Length: 228
Image (cartoon, one colour):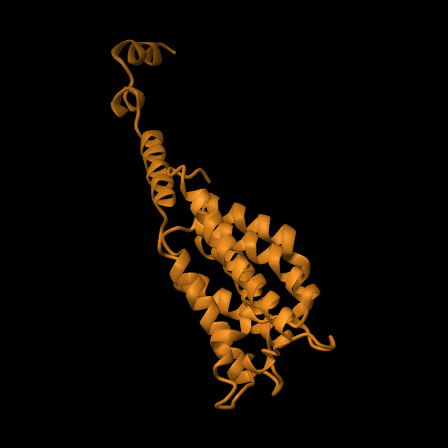
């Protein structure tokens, strides 16, 4: 999973840092000014609630809500931006808007806010991309994400008060759909890995000596076989 661009990791960190900084800035402003931005969340199947598709991931109910979403969002964005550079931005945007759109279509008619739906989408995206692509890079990342965030699966089930389980479930579905869409879009490192594998398989099939050397007996061998 080595990157050829030494600056790509720091660029990924910058984008992820900027994203979580905006989250914290928005919440800090609402905290200091006592402005309630909850009405900018997603309110399913209403005209006034459709704006939440754009705004809801940036709004959090309290500091605890924000702090619980910050580490996974930062880590997953950095991972995707670094290891899936070719598809990272279109995949992130698709997960973002697809999650919000599905919540608006199928969620309960309450305000849905927070970035957790997007986070579930990012987890599902990395995991299912490993299932669909089945190369060393994607499988290793899928195992890593499954190990660290596998326990999040409990969040997709209803019954937790104050939790938008629909955002979690529909975010996970959005991530899986996005992974399927980009399953055949190779990164540069994946292409090189596939080419090395083909070269190795080709070399395995080649013989150091001509095939006839192993298939036809020599004159001495024939004489010996006639004597025995």
